Image 1 (cartoon, rainbow, N blue to C red):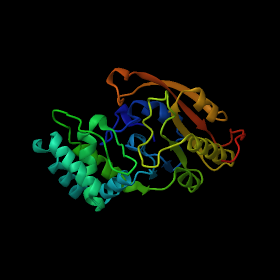
Image 2: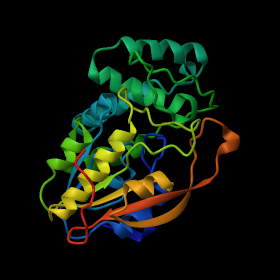
Image 3: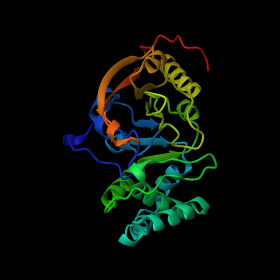
Image 4: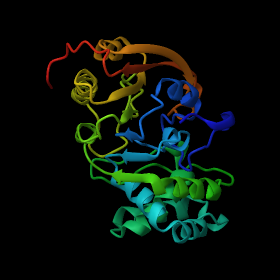
Amino acid sequence: MTIKNLKKQRAFLKWAGGKYNLIEKITQLLPKRPDTLVEPFVGAGSVFLNTNYKHYILNDINPDLIGLYRHLQLQPELLINECAKLYQGKYNNADAYYSIRNEFNQEKDTFRRAVIFTYLNRHGYNGLCRYNLSGHYNVPFGRYVKPYFPESEMYFFANKAQNATFTQIDFQTCMQHAPKGAVIYCDPPYVSLSETANFTQYARSGFAYHDQQRLAHTAAELAHKGLNTVLISNHDTPVSRSLYHSAKIRSTKVSRVISQKVENRRAVKEVLALYKVGSIHHHSKAI
């Protein structure tokens, strides 16, 4: 269940807050015995890709992300071949990008949306995934010289996904329905470091402080009842430390790649909050 030979596998999607640089520290804290890992906020899936549990339950509230993963799981060759067609040079310009983005925002077919979502992820600005209040994808063109087509990474994901179940439900529902004994790793939209550094609206619904409270309460409750050990990542702030007061907290620094302002890219402090079965003193009120 740990990384073999310390060779890490990269996700095929670029993703804000991706856990590639924290994999070693995360896997050190994840229990080794359970057969199942549950991820209520799977994102790009770096933890999934770099662990070796027998089964995975991978959830995200973003329907485009889960739709892509399901199609990649069931039709890997067809999907990857269709994605490759959009990585030709003629589609790497602003006019083509905005035309394809507009197609995506009008498209209803989930397979075609999955194909375009992969294109937008690698051709859009800084790998962001963002929607406006109307639910339309609104990330601007990224102006990269030659976007990388992650073919091998997609095949790796597809192969590993044969042992996964994908869901698109509320994170709390996902956690409460986790098999008894399964380990749960949560990588929620982070609490803000400042009022301007808000990259938490990956899905259309956003993620409010009340949701942060729900997450902390649910994690503590599951561990307190002896059902599941839960590990949560977040920024290291007074707010997050207050939220996770009943957990064992480890602080670490990580260099963040995705930022709205390039000059603000720097190492930031994060917490890993561990709610271990049998070691939680449950104080939090029901949310």
